[in-house]
Length: 132
Length: 230
Image (cartoon, rainbow over all chains, first blue to last red; front, side, top):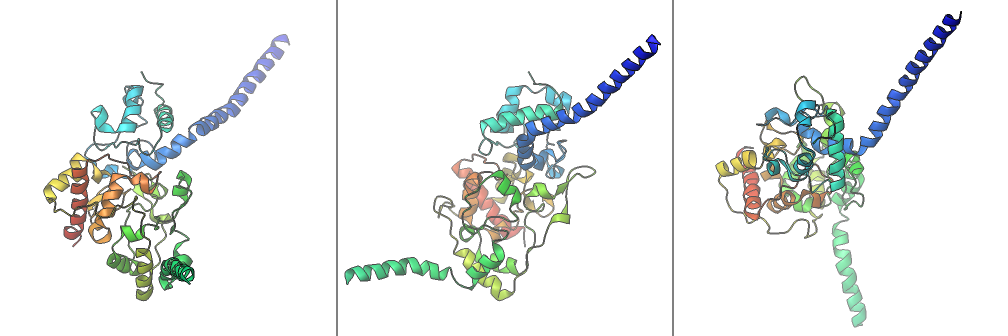
């Protein structure tokens, strides 16, 4: 009897945890969406033309490009790029970090704050931490 | 008496351009075009406005377009930006790369000849302020197409977003093989030099080009129109 009620209690608490996590996951996702909303909007405006609406490097302009745009969902490739290089390449363009001229400088469009937000958003997209 | 004369002259100076701007074309602009285009400099230059506007701003059209092209295009409008404006609203994922989604694109109204001529006339009166398009900025020197092409493609990457010939190049920017017929040299020069001066949030980056490069690129784009389009 004792065991049964303990079992019942633990079943209930497990169910409770599962239920709670169901509510928590979307809440976290929604919070993340809100946190990155501005950067995502900037991404859709400036980056998606080459890096793609799915952030996979297959944008509308990528078909005829001699160097393919980076896949921002690639955790390994993105994780290897140091933070300061990400900030520099967005602000000053590919040539500034010995990469392709096809990546232009966005420093005249996005502010330094927006570029920092974009770098953080890219870490969120690649799910590859905060860099080195 | 003198004071009255001066006042009359003053009124004349003010009324002159106002009267010219009140013609049939200006009426058509105000009744048919302002739903999608700004014909006065917009106060709101936010990113939200860029996403919401339905067509390019026309408040500097007189310094941007060539009148014969405007007259022709307004009678038979064809798409200039392969992915429309703003491109991001007309793109969907494809099997390999993103593709243009034409479902949400509305065709531009076709105008009868007389209306097209009147509207072109009114648009040409919308001259850009001197700080936006500097008259005589493009020196008009002939450019080697081989050099220009290398510059446009490999060296500066313009082809990533723009097409220099039909069917090859990027789709988020305006096609440029018709630019020579469509655009004025001083506008091309000024726009490449600083696109954000025209629109602070526009999705064309500033390339920070040196003066000789700006001249070469402008000349190449103008000559593209004279060679490739025909």
